[in-house]
Image (cartoon, rainbow, N blue to C red; front, side, top):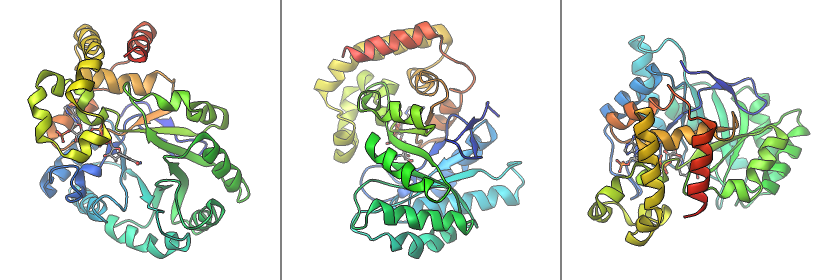
Length: 320
Ligand SMILES: NC(=O)c1ccc[n+]([C@@H]2O[C@H](COP(=O)([O-])OP(=O)(O)OC[C@H]3O[C@@H](n4cnc5c(N)ncnc54)[C@H](OP(=O)(O)O)[C@@H]3O)[C@@H](O)[C@H]2O)c1
């Protein structure tokens, strides 16, 4: 297994890469459906080759992603295919819901996942009917009961992180992580204070859309016609258009050049930049819909970019 990193100031130790599973929603219009067999194969391969955790959310198919994970992990346990129990990061969706929904729905999460405990429970985004104080109170109650081990947030600003961490301190807890969009084409967390706050407070960053939903693999640059085959939502979410592909081509070229030197793909170089450019602060959770992608993504863990190459990528991506 790759060298593990501490999640925030919790006792949880995670591989620098986790397994993203929005792809296992099987509805919602962003991703094509993924079969239960493919989910099983992706999890099995990833967990046998250095990854030790999975990121999911209630909202990913309203329990479908969690259920597919639960079934696959049960089968893997029955087969003794993995010599450990993977960590699970799940998320509660706060939009138009009050804080008491956190405790009302937790049993459903555990049932879907077929587990007694969730390791990291994250507030999926900052908008809710209830105050953050009430949401944190519910989360802290779940920690107290031993149902969740650590509390995280997602899509929170630097101020939101500070506020959540301060509220958790009242219960003797700390904020473990903030999950945000972060990749070589979306470096906003470096500019909006999120990375700075995370470093200052000892909070981990979990980078979602680490491949800008496939753009950083170079596949759309190599085959621009293929853009028409992906969902409109995905094109919007990751700004995938002929104009943006033209603008970002210099980065893909440098990813290919550095990749040739290391014997790695642009995707592997992009993920490696995420997990090493900020020392041990950032975890990345690439999603995969095919076993070949999972195989490629785990091979990010067997090398590390030199400081010189990280700086080069920083410069090129800053000037697009
Ligand atoms: N907290 C939040 O608000 C939030 C938001 C978004 C995502 N997330 C989490 O972050 C995870 C990852 O983010 P994401 O799914 O948006 O984007 P991503 O990981 O950047 O992109 C995933 C897509 O890239 C392609 N891909 C992945 N690995 C590849 C490889 N090695 N070679 C070629 N193509 C590859 C696949 O596209 P194809 O399927 O087309 O082949 C895959 O579905 C999600 O699964 C989810 O767990 C969280």
